[in-house]
Length: 269
Image (cartoon, rainbow, N blue to C red; front, side):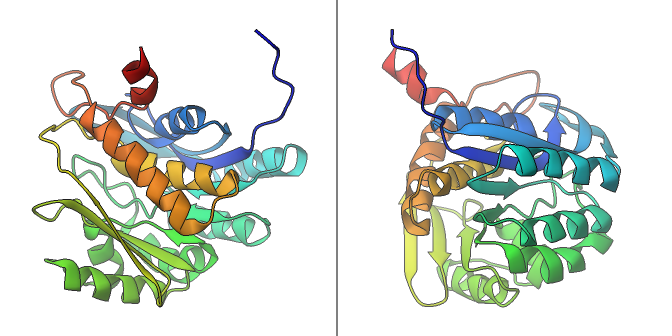
């Protein structure tokens, strides 16, 4: 087998750790590996987390987050950045400042709660997300609960997704991806920049093991952008990848298991 010499595109995730391995930094790096990019990480918080929920969270100091980011970006460089759990207003504002000085597309997953309903963002940090973080985003990827947190809009149908997208775009991201997975029927998402609309639809699989879906989707989008794809193409590819991962999600422990980040490799075996 020939030795590979080309350097793959580099993607940085700025997020929290999931000790159970299904979401957070762990999911991000698995996704990046599966999609052919080199994943790097800035750890913002540590969680004690398993299939049943989050038992504890400990955020890192601002200086530690800034040092990790500068260490990676100043030496190795990045072609895309993805953000996840940022925990506090201080961390949100620090990361937003760092992103504003980085010449790379940014995918913001405005993580507010875990799959089990555990809070992962302090309530007082929401305004910092609106005014500092979303304005530096190339793509913002809120689910319907996060839309409600950030805008007060309660989405019940596809028309509501349009309104939600307008509200999110008003904060400044170039594109909004409103994830409609919590609605009944097909798993439908809306991607828009305020003019063009892209509706992405996929079958809904009867599988409760969906831990890490949001992290995985955002990381897949960032991977596509790092590979040189435009936003609609990157989002379409990410949707296909995460749909397969949801279909192949598997049980771990006594609760909700993770999506399968390696489903393409296992499907080929």
